[in-house]
Image (cartoon, rainbow, N blue to C red; front, side, top):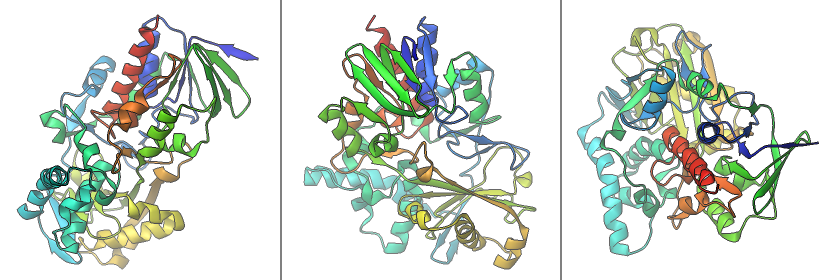
Length: 421
């Protein structure tokens, strides 16, 4: 039996929900196929770790005027500015700096400027990491660990041209906000009136002009005139979803030419504060890279720390158990605390590892552009014969690696479909 509809949307993350909402409002009948048993994709809020929401995936609204604020207003949500970067400490291979030195902040600010000078002189794309090669190895690692979380990969793996193709970045993008209640309730509100089929894993997309047929793992078949594909880049790269006929060469080149960043979180929950309440984040040359306090509100009640691990260090997790990762993270965190490591082990109530790059339905954190990959995001976003439309953070040239970038890409795909009427 084939289920007929006008538009199939694959994925109920930010991009998929955006497309489905916009198309439904435009009068289309839309069916959303979601592999998970929830909406949100790589945005997922946990309400069991503490008496406040803890984000397992996407954490912030980046910027005070991005589209997410329109969604908050529409669905009755609020957000508050985070204190995550108010007081940062740094560990230079055991040399603890009480506050992040102005020198380091200056190095961070200069990375992109120096990288631009390098590629302009070389007249060819170069790794962003070339801009920090003049620093000593310890400082180089600190700067890498400060920035790689924004990029989804280590600086040596990111192409400078790809970074500079991001356009129209608002001046307040450096301001970060937490959604009161978390991302999951917001996405649940957006999804309320949509036709979403959960636990529905897509395995094949057969397409021709003005027709797409989607087959699922449990042998359901859906047919429509248009299909919006919001699968994460890594899923497209893995070929776990087959296209018949195969996608055009240009589309395959775009998929394979972009980078799927490895991003993990390790969340440590303690039964009492282990660091001064005023301390909000730490950067380290250790394996855990970057720490911050999750959640909002009174820091005295937030006895939790999130470690954000990206790139090479996240790749190493593949050969480690969760217990081993928690032990390493606790050791890295203990350097900043007045408590001994043994004492912190006793104070630890729970350690949770979120391996996005090993998750079956994401296989990544967020995308980046390697050397030679500039322009591929735009090619990834291009539709095919008015049948297949692509959306997701990896297709965004303006706001990649962000929730609002993913959401805007979904709206763009919906608008492109509406234009085919």
